[in-house]
Image (cartoon, rainbow, N blue to C red; front, side):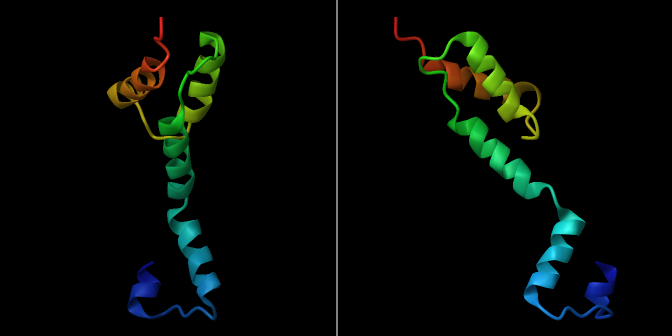
Length: 83
């Protein structure tokens, strides 16, 4: 990135520039997708075992840890308690 800021690198196309940015700073897009998936998740009528597996898959790569992850889990299961 230092070369870009100093003007030492020039890109022929915008796509070349974007590809370079993705290589340099990649991962954010995948994390955003995982967070969105995690936030949409609800237990609904699923059995707890099925929901836990789905939650674990969504949580992996989301960047959520500790309390924020627990809060998402609580939110996702709170709609299930229709006794």
